[in-house]
Length: 101
Image 1 (tube, rainbow, N blue to C red):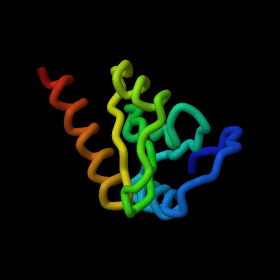
Image 2 (cartoon, helix red, strand yellow):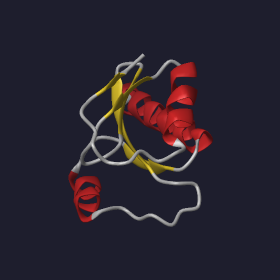
Image 3 (cartoon, rainbow, N blue to C red):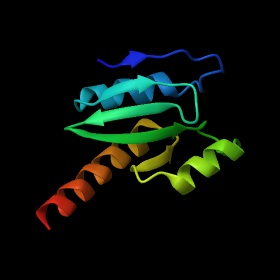
Image 4 (cartoon, one colour):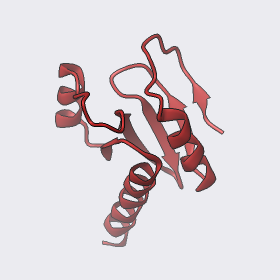
């Protein structure tokens, strides 16, 4: 199980179900406040997830856009558990591909 760091802004209602699904596949989930919602540790790699609501009406903040532009970490916007699992597995496959040369 992951952890929770200081978080003062509202959590998207779908975030708990996303965390639960990721924990089922063995990911450790850490809730953070800024600039994104979740840091995920999965099989030795770190993945960044920003959770948005399922309807898709909310957009990335200016800080988040800048973060996504500048980070070299695998980073994804997800709206449901399936997207989150897919993002984590995609990041894992990419890491293995890089390591395999």
